[in-house]
Length: 249
Image (cartoon, rainbow, N blue to C red; front, side, top):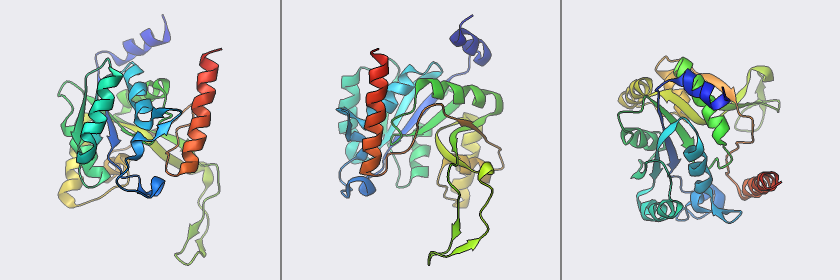
């Protein structure tokens, strides 16, 4: 039995929807809030296309929802139409914060999906293999996120730049990434609970923690950093070119 067959047997009939968040202005990236970062070309391809293709190829993803700024919907819609994605895909308008945009995407997911995988379009290096790996863990525990171990020694610093406390143990520190995969019923409770109490989180796992749910982490096997600055794009292009070179060997 192949790995994919074993994986399907383990997961049974469960299905997962991808929610790709592409609503950021990208002002830190280009200095121009009117220019959508997710459409920046990496090796000649719009950044968001890499994430969409990865989720399209992931075995456990049954549909894709892209969340965009209202003014970018037609641009993204035209791009996706040219891509000819093999899975159901739609573009919806997001909210004025990341958290509200994620909820807009969640509300657009079909009822047949018992799980959701929320991903930042600014992480174009995610692979189908890592997506399926994270989903497989979420199917067992209801809440799982991509993460990487901290490689630097963290410091707690005041606004003036002074180290104020003893550094936490680096071995216990992980850097949260996406995708973040959750049971739809648990995410619904956490998202609306936070909305009701006015709690704003920096990522979706924080919503789960706020609602009292536990979350596991899975280390990705490939680079999965967020493209925030132009130097990040250069590094991403180098990795993409290396992957293409290995695939052609």
